[in-house]
Image (tube, rainbow, N blue to C red):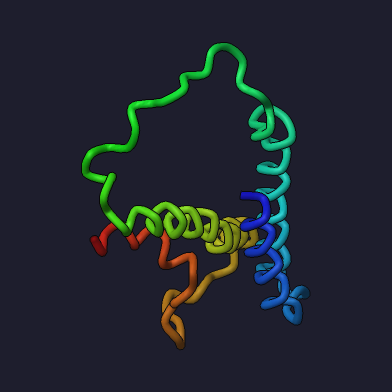
Length: 127
């Protein structure tokens, strides 16, 4: 998660680098960085992914659900779902920044929102 979130924040910072004087953009970047620091802290402490498992570890589990065993799309679904959920950090940070600064955000956009973050959570509804 750390690298994906850092990538999204790098893209966000690069995209809005000329508008950092705008309070909405500055607060959104601050909120996104606070979210990143929170998850980095979780990974460094209580949710460290590199801690060894204590106790007996079963050799084999029950395996995947029978409906998921032969489905080719199962290789793509978790990846896009994960990218979408992590990618929603960007709109979340702008929403919190709009609430914090009292700025109004335009409901409509001049172009459709076709980003990797819009692909993730909608991918399960396709199949």
